[in-house]
Image 1 (cartoon, rainbow, N blue to C red):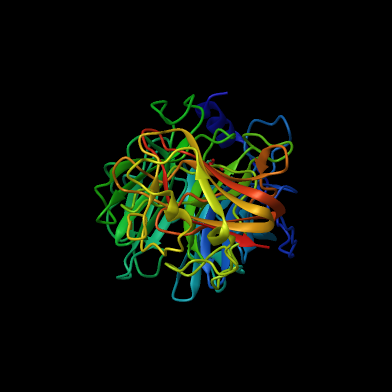
Image 2: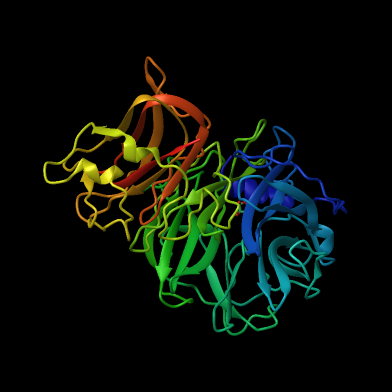
Length: 487
Ligand code: FUB
């Protein structure tokens, strides 16, 4: 069924307002998808204090029903980005007396101690989808209609052909912005300081190449980022029924935008809806897919993975995992050493004999366990290991004369901004007496530049530990330091 037909089918459908209970229903998971006892979609993350919240719709379509059945929005939460609690439905179609169906994508933006929940919803007036806004005094609500009518509807001048998928961003100077729109029709406007009125005309921003729907706006190091779903088949998806997440950057919140590439490739559901947030010093992407048991295009599930920036501010394409990110409890715990500082613990690397599949004659394998503390991924001051011009999969290895018990490693990648770049992926492996196998229950092998990438795993007793890495296309790889910690 084409997108147009299923959107049309949804328009025709009448979904009864359901008053959904908001009782706490904790369901903890440490894997992707993060919640599997119900289907959840269109996730929008928000960090408040030591908690990451995800505001998500709920897919209630029966198996085989090729239409959205969405009546409520739920709030998931976590204090470590790995283990999640479902706090139940915190808003639903009944929150908006003027609406009647289709609780589609929303996003919460805080301001002055209040939490504004912008939603896509089918109003009872002319046209189809509208943008509503509810407000609450805490991230979990209770939320009530902030306006008593749509903020944006088909009668809003220059509105989108499909008024869905709001993303709201409040800049450092207090000016708020809203972007939204589906069917390739992205729109932008300023919001007044009360957050419930448009402030000035609706404009059509430029530079969001191949925009389809689902914008997500944020700011990092003074640069504005817009991620959005695109459904072009030019390197993005295999069929225009699917979507990827592209992104653009701008030096002004209203654009013009410059397209930068793909953040998240095609997922297993046709729709692709995502958000990006920083939590406890790390960056995360939340998105949905069809990977839960019984899942599908109308029975989607929220997933979470790490997101990495390059030193120049560009975003590395996300590796979709089934494990989700390692626990990030904050406070400089083992997975998040303070910026610039190596993780603490007994580092067994210093007593190991090192070897590698290949080292360039002008580089030095001694770099990996000489105890250097790199200032950044370009810092050669304590030597650098590199394997230019080799590409593909390479490895470095530690060997001890007798078995050591190891449960954690930390890799600091070398990136010379020339032929050597951080790898596309990596694995920690150990010698089990007859073969190299992956370290068990690995938390994920990070490939961030300018950081110690900590991998935790179930303890192994071994004489040989190996870091295997695969280069990014067109690049070789390198390591400035690789630590291996005694369990
Ligand atoms: O979940 C309903 C709609 O599907 C959302 O509003 C779009 O972003 C797409 O995910």
